[in-house]
Image (cartoon, rainbow, N blue to C red; front, top):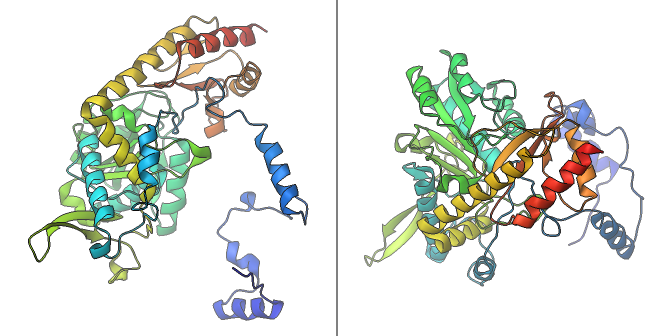
Length: 448
């Protein structure tokens, strides 16, 4: 592919055509604090070999999740992905997995998307699920937009337990269409606080369980309060494996479920790509973003699959589109489907139980360390602790003991005033020796 740079005259003509005075006018919606005031501090020119060496040296400074005992979570979880998953997704039938526009040549893709939807519906306890979205955070944003369309109201009340990155992603998306967001203060166990904020202008209330601090909550009463006021309840789930053990969002009265599916079939992979799960009530199906794969029969009466609903703006009647989601993370969706098929219901429940047991063992070990306060009382595989020192400094010190101890909450929300709070996660990959090392090393660091 050739790179054909524009001349200054080309740029001037293009800017004039759209009514912009300068290139800077194209970025007026980007907050000034997020802009650079000059070039990035990198060499202007470097050869490919030099770039590879420089980047490799930078990467070598990192301790990867598989190299040391690992207790990081906060929305991204280390689970064992069977080798079968990687083997199957590399088969030629799936290498170019993407949105299936022509059903006559995409029956395989459509079938696994149909099966994926069935799995997600069963997992979330909801009647219908779509063929996936980008990730959990954008799924939450789409849920809020959907709620405003359904209720014809313009305000979302968001619990203080929702992951701060999910909140920021949602605010970035919905502010452009004038949706108001009321975000409650960060709280370890206060999902029900949203009830007091529900008013006649509330389109939806958004809660997370387990929340960012790990607290698992039965949100049934929140659902009842929202419905009594004519609002919808959106339940966010960042750890999909938790739904194998906890009461499903659908059982608790959720109208929309926005979840992250990374935990099943998809490795951490330095931050992505991930896969967004989205499920809703059947009566709301026509307002759902993304795509819905359906089962049908062909002219010969044989079983087949098609895109039953599609809200993408590139399709016909694009002025009626409910979403501009342009992909469904097809390969990640396939990985999810394969892993879920391998596990089955019994396997998922056993996996979830093992996660909880590992987290309980970790909690017990840390509770015995002088100065450590366990903040999360009800949890699945993650909990928050308060330390007698700055959590970031403790994590940095523990890295010197060759372990990654968790995620300081201040890294997610710097202004929350929780610099001493650490989020600790344990999964089936956590060894008893890892837990012992964490407790021993933490005691030494805190005593120093």
